[in-house]
Length: 627
Image (cartoon, rainbow, N blue to C red; front, side, top):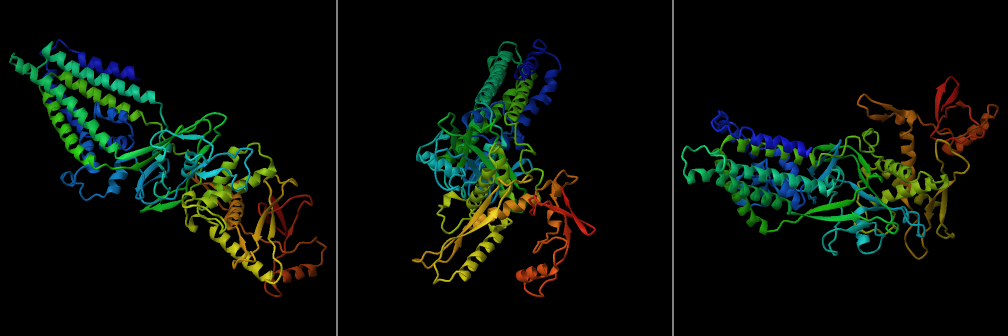
């Protein structure tokens, strides 16, 4: 591709070398000579996008040579680093730092965030709730509770532990001081555009583009000198040395000064942020890890954002993880007074020089600008797709159940050969850990602020219910077990099975109500995050059942599970069973004459397993099971 562009530009520069008196020169001075420099002034959207994703000096060089968006670069540099007088001059004195940071910088802060929005990434003002996680499978010799060995951590906490030697070194610090800390996630939202939004390219591609860019621009400068001093491409009728030298000299010097000034402007914008990078380690001793991003449904400002989940592909892992933070140096304000005049003076000299030469130099410069704009646009072309989200096809259906859906997605991606007995235990440990990482943990858990991200109860559909159930269980235990009696932990066993093919191999999940310590004044306690995990996983398995899902015209899936009536069997007997037994059991549960139960007949397999997962269709007097 690069070679074809070269063949396009250079013939354009040398066609008609001997046509000194043709009419193209008059035409070009009225159109091409003016059009090229004027076009280079504009291009605001592409310029802002490129500047907001530039982090290295090579990125700045690629922007500065064969430039477009010169005015945008000047105004942007003044907006980010300029003195208040300069900002007032360009009409940006009333803008807050957050607006400018969101528009032009790669950094995240307490005011600026990035959210995934239907296949794109939106920079917004606000404080989002986005989990940036890492799953690192525990080693076989690790001990501890199932929660401690779930392997799911906040990525920032995980990298901090690696830095201090408390975790296996699956990642290593790639730049900066060893003692630099990442800071809490609440003040540093994830850099989605740098880590998820743009597919990371090899460094050789940027070097190749920079080399092509340098050769093209240098070729145009050489063409200007050779054209005037050797081929006589100046427009002046006078033959003295001053009239021959001024145009190419102005063009060469002006272009060099302008490009240098643009490089300085891009560098000023880019260097107001500091990037902390971690590189993935490989090898048997480092351990594997998988990065995960989860965004619940939320409203930031006046815009709604759909749920989003992205699990790193193990076959195409992220090699470098980047976190960007604002780091404005007071010296940048002084540097702006040098960079901006350099661009303006260089551009004026560049324009005057082009006006004094034949059309071929103008067309060659225009071709260089066009080719470089194309190459700059192609560099970050591989971006996150609309369907890359694990939740892309069910944005409404999954609201409130993002943690449950993620737990199922994760267990299916890492446990292809896990035995049934371990499958649901590992699934439950994933979900409990996700509850803890979003701020729901029991009173006897001891988690530091940097180890979790606090979500409001409204973000999780079953969280308030789980807390209510936990409170009710503790209150019931307080009533049933008198203080004068010996108190021991109470264990509830809940049958757990893997659907759709349950078997006797499946066993129980335990919920422990811990008895109060005789030496303390506290009451009974229970891990409500575990109750949340059980309720959430069970409810989501019902909602996501393929039998209750339909597809809308927009290709989004919706569930009508909530429209299905749920009946509780309080008494069961065969057809010949006495009704007195049924009435006695109903009175036991609800009290006498409080409720009138409805009778129905269902046909069941005596060896089968039945639960809320089974759906029955009312058909006459006999309910038939829907397979």
